[in-house]
Length: 221
Image (cartoon, rainbow, N blue to C red; front, side, top):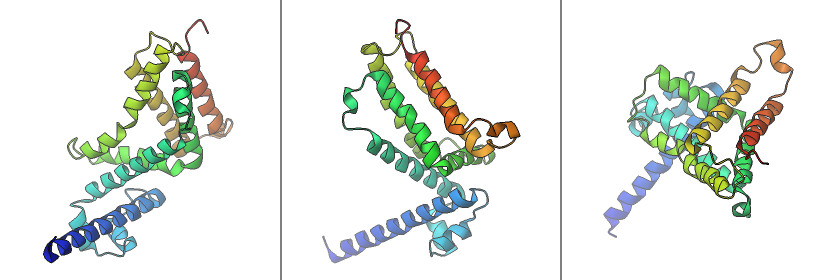
């Protein structure tokens, strides 16, 4: 490699490193202050960069917001993978699905800000009418969990721990949407009425997860 090529490679790495720092700082600000309330100036300042640099790395705030959401999902996928026990493959399909459902509760308890951000991100996408093309990279990260979860459901059908008459994709979407919707309610709007405090969020999640597991079990069990 020539000296010129080495210098170019070094510059590219430095630029990418600065860009990654900006995404990290933006995510921290979005989690703390909200997406709409955080400006590109705020992110540039937190990254020890100028506003011109921010717009060199990200054409618009929309691009930065999507990059932070993508980073958050990458972090989440790593945590899920690290949480899976070594003997996970020996679990029945139902046990695997039940374990994954329990992670929703764990993340709700330990990472409520993550769910607040994801709800805000959805609202941001709708409010600003972001195009599907702009969201392609983010959608890829959203879908990473689906094949694995559907494989667990199909494994349960094969080992007879899960009902055979269930539509795998429909079940996956219903389970995840139900849990995500409940968590969004709990972390964003959980204290609207006095009655909202009567039952703890963890207990509500336990109830939903237990209902899902009961629905999954074959009728002869």
